[in-house]
Length: 284
Image 1 (cartoon, rainbow, N blue to C red):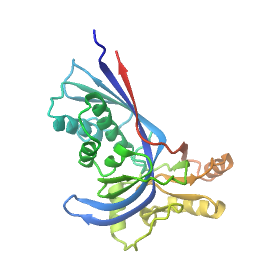
Image 2 (image 1 turned 120 degrees about the vertical axis):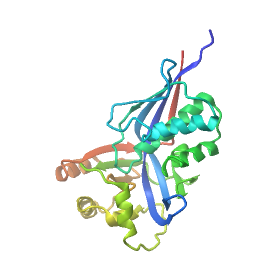
Image 3 (image 1 turned 90 degrees about the vertical axis):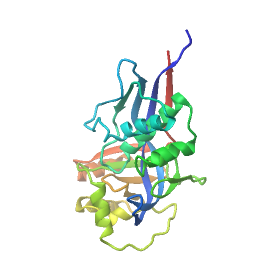
Image 4 (image 1 turned 120 degrees about the horizontal axis):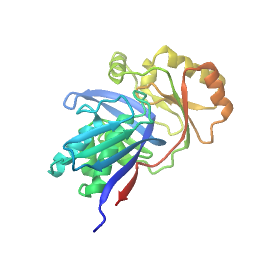
């Protein structure tokens, strides 16, 4: 009997925004225009995709309290993939092992959706990168970036993704996750209420427009770092709530201890930059 692909495992990396500015609202797409520089980091969710001939439709299995129906981005990714290749969904199980914190500006939901598209395409080998980016853009503004991953610029409403050939000056990241989430829609509303001047990207200076409207708790963290660690670069990721330190060299343990002593309810994740999703094929 010929061996066939029975299972696809995808490691889905989180991302940080090294640069983020928000432009005008696009009425046609109902999204803001954005200008980003992103970097994937080695904090992974794990997606396992299996064909299940004993069931029908899309079945989401997860260790998290995320939704398991059509409101889940991985569900939407699977649905759109099969619609695009014009094949019925006989039965697909998608297991999501979450490690990336939710509502934290690290794009856990978006990277998982991209992981499903990439995994299914490994199974069927039907779509080009451009087709995958097109499908990703229909799911969410952060999803197309993860089809490429790595050090890349993102423009438009997220659909214009271009790898950056220059080397990212930062390899090491300390993610500082507060004990509260932040709502992306509310953060955009706050940003729309103020007028921001255009910021020019400089590769060794981190910037995020959402820092102007972040809550007082994160302003205290920022002020703590500015006062005590003047040589470190740090910024908000996405619309929050994760704040991070970016460094060319490994971040010292005494910095981590100092942060936890002053912000004991926060969680720290020591990570490094990585290139893209990792896909493992299991054949029986």
